[in-house]
Image (cartoon, rainbow, N blue to C red):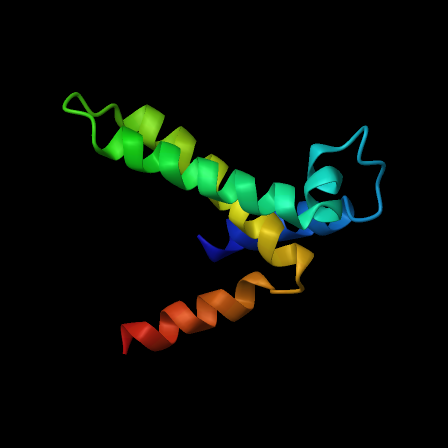
Length: 94
C-alpha cells in the first residue's frame, strides 16, 4: 500500500508550481485554505457513506480515495512526506 501512496505523493509533487488554472492539484497546493476545506468535505462524505443503512462499498471506497488524495495534497503543501506519517502508523502498531 505504501508504494501507492508514494506514487501519489510523486504525482502531487510534480504539480507543484504548475498553473493553478490548469491543475487542480496545483490549485490546492497554492491555496491551503481550499485544501483544508476539501479535506473536511471529503471526511464528512466518507462519514455519510459509512452511516448509511444501505452501505455501498464502492461509494465508501470512492469517497475514501478522495479523502486520501486531498489529505496527501494538504500534507505535501506543508512538507509532510508519506514516509513520515507511515512511520507514525508503524510506531503505533507496536
